[in-house]
Image 1 (tube, rainbow, N blue to C red):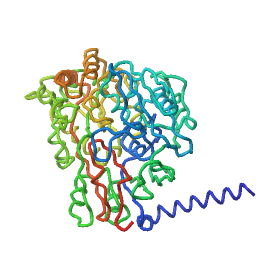
Image 2 (cartoon, one colour):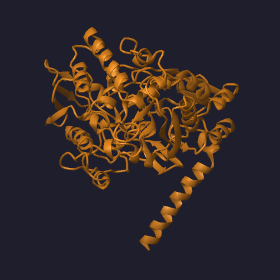
Image 3 (tube, one colour):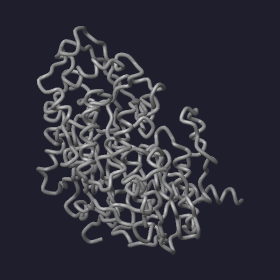
Image 4 (cartoon, helix red, strand yellow):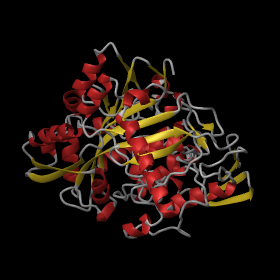
Length: 527
């Protein structure tokens, strides 16, 4: 009898949720429906390393420090205040807020912080960002509300790294973890056995229902210790095509659409009197990656020829309708003191034929849908640019994001010689656009090994301040070397847009350079 009642309750819950997502007008009366063409394949902080899973973690989980809505200066979150830092810059002491609970009912303690940071770094999932925590030597927990983090060496960016979602604090009594670091060359099954997709955080929302590639329902959590969100529920709808999302937004089925519309669709929406466009700060970049372990990308001449041929202006106009800025470094131009357009100065006046005297067959890979519907157009435009030099025969191939991330990298195990990628900042510092790509051991790509580059990258983190002249000179040397070796070709910095119905408020409050789209600030008139 109990099993029958349990089954009836289960079906009732499924029916209720189905009714909810099939009746958007009723749901939208008091809550927010967000549309996106992004996907979410994981909600585990140890594995997550793309925009939308990070976006979910920002709204459900919390970190010791964070960026406020539209802010670029770090503020404490789970920590009561910013850390006390030792004179040598190697010891960070955090005091935790009291009264914080996780969504499983357990109380936050220093044990959970130590567990979470160790877990993410020890798993070091190939798809994740565990490498961001590689500065940590050890963690002490002298009492339930004090965390003392010892670094291997001083690093000016360490606190900023703790604001990224890999450092999301989860309850130690509900997550699996290895007892120590998993080797980088371990089989995928060894990483994945520790991954948990039942997200438990301490943030304002909890995951009420998640159907991959369809929808995710987030409801406010009554036990949240902070300020109550301006809405009660957020339903995220995942659209296979931006054309479907466009119709949904115009009809009122969706309140907010964020990532990704085509250029034509954006222009269409800007003409609507019922739709408001919010322009964000550009910090997300696009770039072309070479795997030097595979032909023909292993040839520096080939890489330099591609760098010389790349027409960024043409890409931005033909693919994005001007909604981007060209970038001649992995560091975006917004970092005015650090940005050095070395790809522009290095290849000014150069042509592909200055580096190649024979035709090269090249396969360019990209991920279908992950970066929006313009991705195919981007790949096709790059193909045309290269083939017009009469030095390249380019074959385009694509795969879904899960397969793409498995086959593209790391290093020698990757199967794609050349592939398109995108990057959203983990922390707002030029280092975040350099070390994750160029450092031999700290890079998630793991395709570039240059001792001089490692030395330069290590040096800039030891600076006395983030904007010293010495640090800026080091950044310049890093970008010069990157342009000469060309493991990556930077393309552009995208300009983000969100579109909302005219009765929705708060979108403009969460479009900052930190790239954190916070649902808690969204509301509707009359709700």
